[in-house]
Image 1 (cartoon, rainbow, N blue to C red):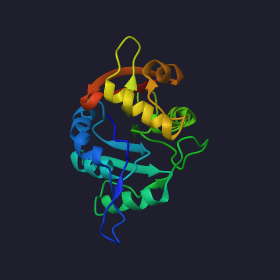
Image 2: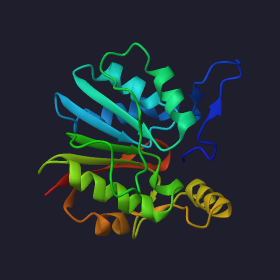
Image 3: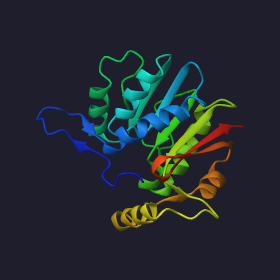
Length: 208
C-alpha cells in the first residue's frame, strides 16, 4: 500500500531534503522491474518526482541512463536537487504539471511516473498520457507504478482503506482501475503488468 503521507521534512533546519518513507521499501523492487524495461541508455523523464529519492537511487542503479526529474511543487524541486547533488547523470529538476498542455521537455526515451495517479485528479493522468504521447517515439515506454484496482481481482483490504483515506482528503483522488487507465491511454498499448510488493502494480505501456 502506498504511504498516505507522501513525505516528511528532515528535522535538521536548513536541510531542504524531504523523505518519503515508502521509497526505502519500494525502490529496490521497482529498480529490478525497470531492468527488464529500460533501454541501455537514453533520457528518462520522471513526472511527479516528489522528494527526489527515487531519481537519486535509480541514477546510481542505472549509471548509463540520464534522469530528468520534475515536479509541480517548488519545495519538492529543492528536495530533488539536494538528493541528486553531485550525480552526473541527473539533470536539474524541472517545474512540470502533468495536467498542463505544454511541458518543458521536447523529447524523452522513457516517461516514468511513480505514485501520482491515485493521489491527483483524473485530469493529471490524462495530461500525463497526452504528454508522454507527445514526447515518446514508437516503441518507447510509459511506466506507471502504484496501487490500482483490476476487474475480477479482489482489492487488498489495505488498499481499500487507503482508497477511502484518499477520497476523504480529496474526492477527486483514489485508486484507478487498470482497465480505465488503459482505455484512456490512446496511442499506447499495455505491454506488461508486474505485481509488486505491498499490493502495488507496475504498468508498462509502449507507444504505438
